[in-house]
Length: 345
Image (tube, rainbow, N blue to C red; front, side, top):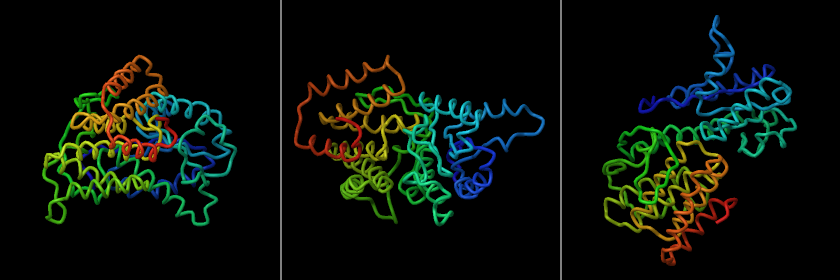
């Protein structure tokens, strides 16, 4: 069991008719629960004798991840669709939580308020339409694991041996940085603070990890990319190879986005991206970094209506204008376009 962080609280919003499917989901999340990655709450967890509405509101407002279990019954229920979902989307839009719709049964959901979000299972195929129901729930569980290992501030089990994590605390704010002096949030710093990295008692090769991570990034294998690029950032910094270390930090930020628009990520993930881009700029500021960081900020800040902070984008773009481009900038931007085809650069 992981004990280095507090499990992420998940709130499940569902219709009564879908209780059997909720129970199936709970069973498939049992390993994540045992490994201390998550705790789940839904209205069937209400404590008898207490105000049920107050309990729902409390957990809906404290959860970091909110699962909407979508079906025709869910869409037809005034309270679950109207009240719970609207509050969930409000917290998603302010960056206080991440909402993930899970399609249980076929229904007309494509024009619903949550339709622009990434939907599970993969390909937006409803759970009940999978030939193998266990395969559908495994798909959901594995995707949630990827999200949770980011939110919880650690990678999957095979990555643990690569890092002796440090500690930090505070609120994760998407502020700056252009100097690398970033505000890192709770459970963010351990992703990047460590001692000499070894694997099977052999020192890691920073350049090889950078090459492996870069190739995985280009191919969309973000889990492998994150693992290798974290190793690369640590080793290359220790070996005093600033250009390569800087690129490793930049590509790590791309891997943390996982091909999704910045607006869809919770604050913890944005904090990690901020940290990584800030480190890249501080170590070796390629001109392309400023524009890429501005693109990421613009999508996140504009979508969440943080208009007073849009001046941060102007600062980044002014720094880009005063920087000299080189051949490496074209390659870095090509990687960004590959990973973020929907985000204009």
